[in-house]
Length: 290
Image (cartoon, rainbow, N blue to C red):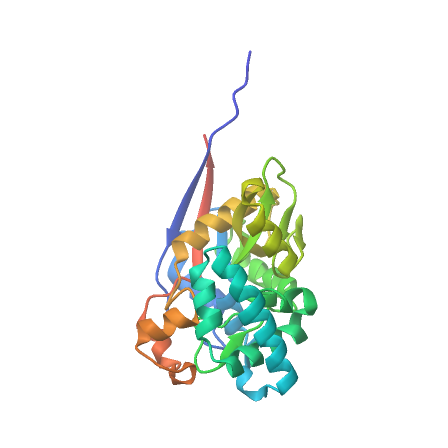
């Protein structure tokens, strides 16, 4: 008798939620929105950025003053090196940000990412070290949570207790990771992550993944996971499903945010502006085997 492999079907559910300001009770928001839709074994996929903002892990880049040397290095790396590479690789959205973002703002951002992630992340063109500029007001950015595993463990405990059922929690960032084709237990990450099998190479992962695309499959980056281990391949698949469903809020990048809000400067974006669109910080993914 030949046993055929069981077919895996993924079901996903998203419901709009209010913007998560600093101090948001994440457990309460999840229960208020999804309590009656969650089933045992479901994967509750959280946006890394939304979680960082809710826990107050944000920073105002305005306090970082660009010095002449930092401005020169930023210009050299972002405008000259990456600017030419983005033009050569036809990655217009990234090129647009690098060219149209004022150099002082770009320099302040680079100084912060160097401090947060070190050189391997500083050299990445955008979204360095998990520092995110989108869907935040003024000159604020979200920072990766240093105690992400502790927070996810606490959320997992509280949700299982209140739901009285086993669930899984996955935190995902839209920053890219790259899984080699034919290999399912490792992937190259462009930002810090606590998920087993993901190797954080920063800018090097970005270069390898983009340069040798035919050898890799591109995914968003799983940042933390708590629950019954599903294997890296499945975790990456779930991350991609949730990220595609979530969308981009006010835009994929800060330039799109300005355009969509009709603003001319970054510091004109307010907290109130962030309420103008639907947000999906949580997506529920269910795995069904048939």
